[in-house]
Length: 70
Image 1 (spheres, rainbow, N blue to C red):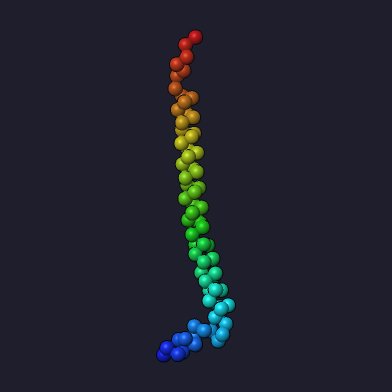
Image 2: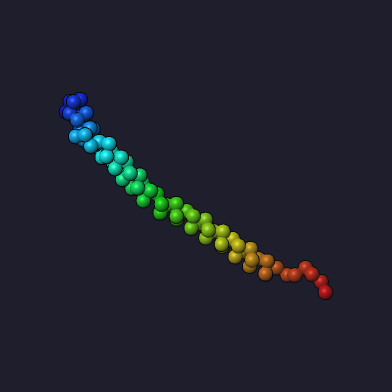
């Protein structure tokens, strides 16, 4: 493969202006499709930890004896 044939390949027969951006969009969508579940999982785990911390704090507050005297 020489430089002329590589240049011809990259030019895509005059359609490179349409072909290469399509490849770019495809790979961006593919990357987003791969990363989205990972970000969603992290967010859900963070929300679950916060919810559990709130429940534990609420349980601790309700189990402590009242300091108010009557």
